[in-house]
Length: 252
Image (cartoon, rainbow, N blue to C red):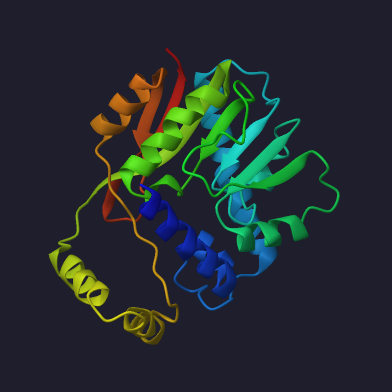
């Protein structure tokens, strides 16, 4: 799992320097620094407005959370939007480069802070610190054993009566044998040539992975961590040719 963590950390550190906004929200027309920051942040507001409403319909809340954790927050696209719906928000990410951008946009938002965590657990936070732990289009970019460990920690750091909510893709409908074959060929290249190929082919020396985890596996792991499924609904955030779900959990 340590090697998985190093690979994930390296990938997002590079992407955080090369094309951070596109890496967070991979719109096909915005690659190469083409995102307008205002337009980019508005996509976060739209996403959080939707999921805040979804959560509020299924979990009794006052509408304003006490302390929200935005897990794998990137440059703060969703963190700042949660700041309008919470007394306090903490964004945590594995990439120092991403968090530097997030911190540069903190002016006037004293109730929001960002924390760098490059560990495979969340011991940086104390037990019962958050009444909402939220993650969106993030857990899908790490191998399941690593993601499952973080989900188990979500249960520890969240308050009784709170909510854990996240999205994960379960499968893809694309014939991906060719993609797997091409990936294996690239990874077999001598050291350094794989990065040169990726930069020539895709404009970046690294590429993030998308992992698919069956919903039964997600729910069983969550239940083992003490999370009770409150709501699950279809979600195609990982792509139109994927099946995925948005999950809302409470304490079991």
